Length: 111
Image 1 (spheres, rainbow, N blue to C red):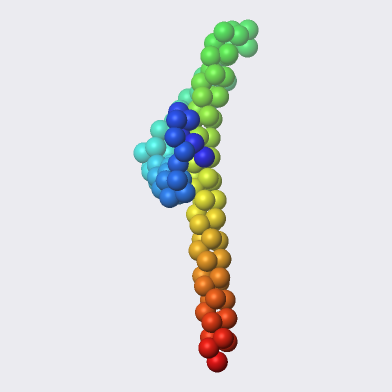
Image 2: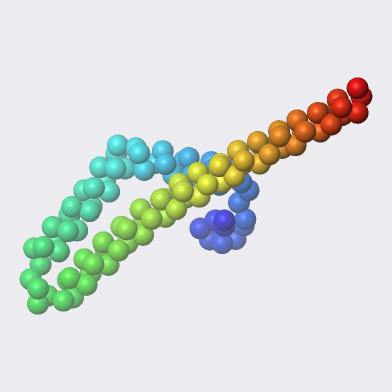
């Protein structure tokens, strides 16, 4: 995974932290309220706009799309962080199992 400007590769730990920060932001009541307020306002403006006013409808549609992209950015960061954490956990378990097997083999050789 790369950063938003594609200039550097993030470590697994960076991905996990980024996902957790994104989740915390999206769960923040103030951020949630702001996003819901914008969502309602854009859809209300869409409903209130005369169907023949294509320029205004197009602008409103663009605002809705931008809001969806904004939410999607954080959603992707959250999911990437969770998947990366799951991969880290799996690697740790595999390493622990490998070490356990090595110890068992060593114990058998010693006996």
